[in-house]
Length: 152
Image (cartoon, rainbow, N blue to C red; front, top):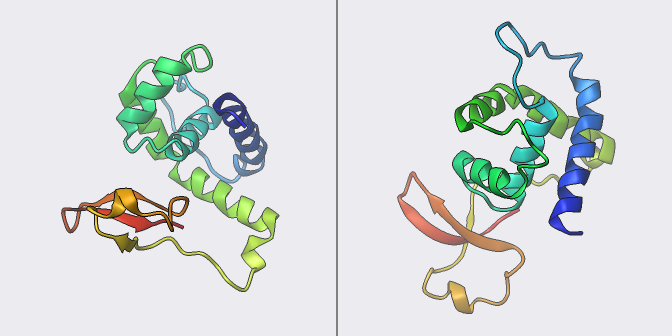
């Protein structure tokens, strides 16, 4: 699946789940309506994380540069970031709903993403071959340390 198909698939999935969830949460309290739909903002965040764009600025810049024709209303970063931050409950509800629908909520073993597990030192990371698909570079702000760790 190429990037375009992935973004379209994520958008369709988010729209489908958002229809069920929007009745549970009152999102608008007043003011002007946002330029991007909530489903578009959630899709941008999900795809941005999947494409390993680490900051809101990176997500905004990448989608504005490469997918401007798809997201015409993506004009100002601060509005995008504010709208994305206000959708945290909706994003959590979509994740919970997908977990229930997929049957993973009833699994006896659950994956919990809490701490990175160091695989090897940074000097050996380029030569490491055992965890290529499961590990990635990261940064721990609390320890001010760059690392190569396993991800779940």
